Amino acid sequence: MSIRENIQQVRENIAAAALSAGRRPEDITLVGASKMNDAAACREAIAAGIDALGENRVQEMTQKLAENAYDGAPLHFIGHLQRNKVKQVVGKVALIESVGSYELLEDIDRQAEKLGIVQPILLEVNVGGEEAKSGFAVSEVRAAAERAKSLSHVVLRGLMTIPPVAEGEHGSVPYFEKVHALYVDINASLYDNKLDILSMGMSGDYEDAVRCGATMVRVGTAIFGARHYTL
Image (cartoon, rainbow, N blue to C red; front, top):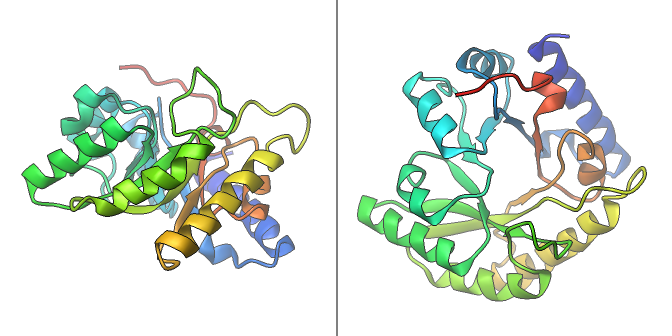
């Protein structure tokens, strides 16, 4: 199947999942995770109506920006962002989804101040407490959201999570439910329900994520197929 056909299939699956949960399909943003896919593949996804594209690696993103790979769609940074790469990302993307430490949060704020902009961000939640993953522990997220609220050059839009590798079908659901509950609580108690993004779900579990309240899913392989591109 082509990228266009894959996007159509993913959208149909999102719609079915949303409707089964009493939600509107149009409220779900589809981000194409375009890691290791070339500029031509990005352009094909944009032509097929993808809502946004997401990159995991700064070097690859920088190269594809130079090739005008993202013209016509918002660009998100969705991978682990090293502090020494902040300057290469802030101001270049519509949303940084993977803010997982206070140090990174404040580095982004400082760089955005230098540029005279306000950078939209999500806080990454390490919902499984995995040592190998970045992100705030569930117990830390509220304080991190309060810190983000106090900064002048970032704007918190919501939360993002990558759950542990699922054991069995629907294994991600308990993690999605936990992050959704956290999102609802922080949104109501700190942000007057102005947060609007809960980014969770990838190729193997995005339908469950939608049923659990995700407003944004990050889908790579189910759209682009096996990754083949190298720098």
